[in-house]
Length: 164
Image: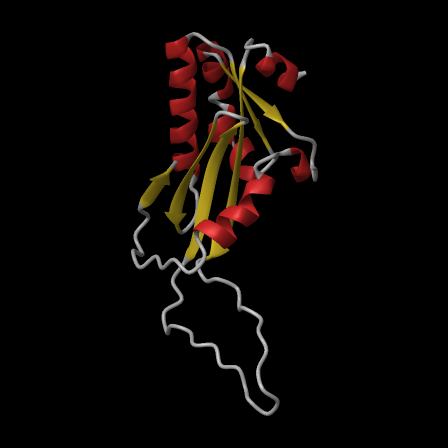
């Protein structure tokens, strides 16, 4: 029903998800001569994990932000506040579809739900263990293997690199 309402222009429908990984591409596979050993060089400093949070509005936009380290509650609330502000500014009903990650249901976030609804932002939770229902999942592999593979992230600070 949400997809139908979005197609009819009745609501703005967005999906949100986050993912984490080490900023190292996986080893490539290739042939070596018998008796030769394959050697993979690694840096002495592996760095922290890279977290990605993204919003997908099907057929319209896919926006993601990269954060070295983890996505904090504060950061999640900040971006959801921006979504609520946009919904209020444009006078449209915006529905955000997301999974049941603890950050999405923490007390600080729950206390903001009614405020966000008053601004026109509504949260829809997917059933537990049904991440395949979020179309962002299809973007993760492409993003990690094609766009972010072989990139180095030397900045160890919690710096956000926003990409479109």
